[in-house]
Length: 176
Image (cartoon, rainbow, N blue to C red):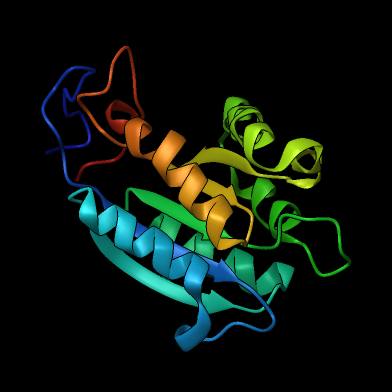
């Protein structure tokens, strides 16, 4: 598909290249259950894992990794997990929001609405967010494995499916 592709709502499924970033000062590949949950789900849905990394919760390291992926025309979606809370080391929003061309305000709002049924009012401590940068969707969710499963199963999977109606993110992505 070209960058002027006419992928529209209602089209058949399009496999996307998705990168996953786990933000954590303590996790390593062997105990990264949140990142692994996202990888398993995206692959089960028919998408391709384009890249996977674990990074310390450092503003500049996060920006460097995500900026590299945003600049890579073969990556359509970036999913991050972790660093969205209120501790001094939770810096994912501060790191990534300046990179966005457009915010996806509804992503965090809908995620917190869905989470309300699962974790009650504790959902207000989630700073889940999303945005578009260089025609790449970036979605950031909390670091808990359950939060990742909830985000994918009840929100992300449909928005990354070209056949989902009335709309989805696929027509807005860069296909070169």
